Length: 353
Image 1 (cartoon, rainbow, N blue to C red):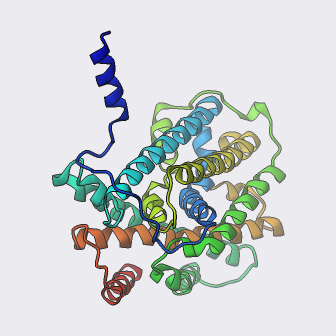
Image 2 (image 1 turned 90 degrees about the horizontal axis):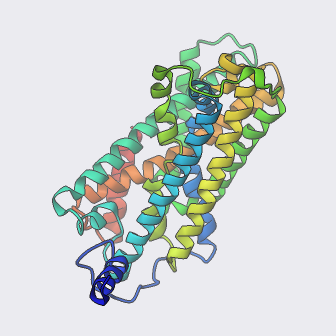
């Protein structure tokens, strides 16, 4: 290899991921305190761990013990890699532009004609997740109210009441401009997730006789594939978190990514392995259904799952609202606080309805 070839190779390695960006000193004006890394971690972790954890044991049953563990490790690795790449692009964009960091604005430097597709995908995915969270919380709470406390009320009525109460109670968090302001609530939700993982261990009676090492069937393998694909999804809130960092650095984003992925990996593997090794092929698509509902710790587990999933609603609505705003203004989000607040309330009200 010649010297000139080596120089060209080195230049290619050091080349920025986003073309056409000049170099400019990174500003530090974003209003957020110094412990923002904890707030960012809470947002990304709570965004990642949602209703998928309840079905991990069933997914592991369909995939087999070996393939299930391998799928968790692979998806965790892919998630961290994508978070790292997005973080690098975020730093390159913020070092060269004063514009709002968003998928739309970053994608403009790579593919201007299709930059809107990413935000459209984020908006659709996040809105679908919001609807799913509301439905699941209503079902879980209706189950624990009716069966756990032996009440004779119509199931649909209880479900609707819970869903309406959930939207009303979390509306202030949905309307907030800052997603990291939900740090305390997110940490409470993560504590509920830890309780569910602990519950799966306490009620476990693991036996290798209940486990198959390899997938049960090809159809079962593909039917549960989306569980592993979406269980580590948290990237939609990364740029929102980055915008709220006072001193955004690649190191901070890397740490948040590592802690988030490790937290998800620990919780997901726990709620997959122990219920699967206990109930085998009889494990339900919601592992809580395999536990005795007459037990008060299990009743508390239903409530913890409902609270945790309910907390995910603002974390799904924020990127949905943000992507719609970016698409509406074609990347040029209004800087006027009155205009921005009016549009934020308008979009939040429409999405909540």
